[in-house]
Image (cartoon, rainbow, N blue to C red):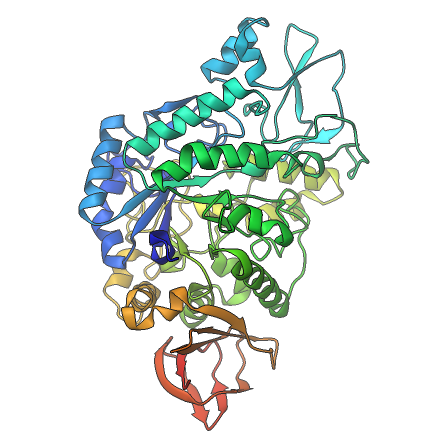
Amino acid sequence: MKEWWQSEIIYQIYPRSFQDSNQDGIGDIQGIIQRLDYLHELGITTIWISPIFESPMADNGYDISNYFGIASEFGTMEDFKELVLEAKKRQIKILLDLVVNHTSDEHPWFQQALANPQSKYRDYYIFKAGKKRPNNWRSIFGGSVWEKLPNEDMFYYHTFHKKQPDLNWENPQLRSEIHQMIIQWLQMGIAGFRVDAITFIKKDLSFKSIEPDGVDGLAKCTKVSRNQPGIEVFLKELQEKCFQPFKAVTVAEAPGVNYDELDQFIGKDGFFSMIFDFKAADLDVKSGSEWFKPVQWQLKDLYQKIENSQLAIQKVGWGAPFIENHDQNRATSKYLKEHATNPAAQKALALMYFYLYGTSFIYQGQEIGMINFQRHHLQEFDDISSIDQYHRGIQEGLTPAESLAVINYRSRDNARTPMQWTDETYVGFSSVRPWLAITEQSAIRNVEAQMKDETSLWYFYKKIIAVKKMPEYATLTFGKIDFLPRMNEGVLLYRRYTEEKSFLIVSNLTNKEQIIQLDKPIKELILNNDVGFELIGKELKLSPFAALVLQEEI
């Protein structure tokens, strides 16, 4: 059965960096409202907004101190209600970020847990008594997962930053509070959630130390605190009590889920509508929590990861293809490397992923080909994970220059620099210095310039979105996917097909001419990225960075 969310085009907004409406250097909800017409023109049908809730911003909003309040720098609840209303006028739905593995240490629950050890809130979190840390687990952001209370022989647990204490999902009273909060937001008219770090809510309750894996004597907590047995009880409860009654769409960040477990997560009665698969996104690092260890990769590695993921997802459920988000570096710089600013290469990359099986996601700035920044000093970084990775790199033997190069390339700040609307001093984001330095003042990589140029990447995104929405090309959304044998390592070939129609998507992500043999006759060209190609019989000759969609004869 087809679901409404399968044909959505979802655009992720990092509100702090999208549009500043009140000239304080920080993006806000009114800024999003100002840009709704822009999103509508591009063809966006749903926006996912990263956290806008009250927060001390230790991790840019992923440390929530009040689930029912809007952070003052982003606006008010009235602003949010206006956003829902204005978006609806333009047929745009809204997803919010659901962060329920942890709260901020400034959340009233945690404050009351600290103030009174007998309080019910002490059991809302994970506390362990003792004079030394209970085990050697390492947090995602470095150091121990255990933080000592100042005046007690007591430690609390945090998967991420010490200002992000984990909630105790074993406590039914805590779960009930979370459920009520979710329902309240759904009653306000949002369409659903992107669900943050949800596979961390169940831990190995033995809390035993494990084999160290670093010079710090610690071991990655992910081995014992991610997708643990028993998590299905919590997730099924969430689905049945919160998501199902509202027919809410849910896109889960669910690291640690193996392909043979996908049915439980996104199958017919799965916990979520879709989950993000990070295997292609993290192909350039040892792991998502150890990106100070870069990994060399080739296009064949990328293509194989995409193929494995897509075929596994297709067997049981629905995909969520993406190439960028707020936790990744820019796709241009990652996947295209020295060709990051080449417009043809940028279009080939866009076409390569956009018609994969699932609901297409676009991250702000991706549609104009924004690139990584270059910072010269550690002090210029805002991202707490980048600062931790810099120090981890030094600890593991990198020089300061090597460590700085790694975080310049992979920092989450790469995706969080202000959206480039114009080529003005502060790129049309604000009239004052933004909270995070801009990537570049570019005459080319800005919205205003690209909307005037029909050969631009922005126009190309508009075109591939429009094609995906056309009824005659519904196969590009709902058809099955199959990957053709790779005749050479530089070209990804996949087919979207039904019994009535068949389309071939071809992407040459190299700067060399490639020749491939087709196995079916071609009916017509649907679209391409304005790069030369030649079709003679069943031989297709592709110029460097050529990408096209062909309709095949059935």
